[in-house]
Length: 304
Image (tube, rainbow, N blue to C red; front, side, top):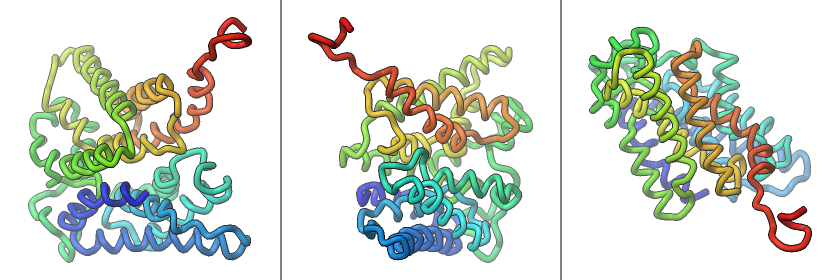
């Protein structure tokens, strides 16, 4: 968990640089809410205090990186309490949660406070390098204008992070630096992230070709670097608890993530789909593990 926190620092640091001190305040509030919720739960219910395992810190930081910088701080705190108390602790604590707590907190806030969760405006009082960036997010522009908007989206800004979005999703470069750290520490492997991103890419390419517009590299890169795809693929789809443990299961899981994310983005009512795709696939993990369980050889094994 400490390695995950270290790997998230590039995205968190760029979020603070991009959006100013308000981003740091959101991170502090979500981390404080998750850690204090876990601490108070342990005290009140006479459970073992588990905050030292750093999982609550990871949940709080991931939640903050999935929130817009303008969200009221009390909402951010409420999301942290929901993530830890409802999704994690009430189901038995670390290792027993049935979906990713940080994404569950984000979806809870999205359902409860949709207007605030989709408000990516940047106040002049804490604006960083976003002085010239206004209007909708790149994904929202793609959703509204389709292929027409793709040519006007600067992919370079998408990759570096000079765009609208949540605190931690804007810079694909910072997220990829964090992914390299995760791989270097051997916290994750490449199965789920590459299968996720690869299947999503294939689906979007078929969609472009099927729409009669031909291949548009700018449109594809806008989908790859825009929104929460990179953050979700490297940091949330790889969560140990909610990811299949079988190698074949991980490949199936990654393909399901990519296909669902593409369907939600291209055909759904919202411009984004990563959070709901990951949560839905989290619920499929027991079934995926069951059908991909390795068959034992010998007596009573494969023959039976």
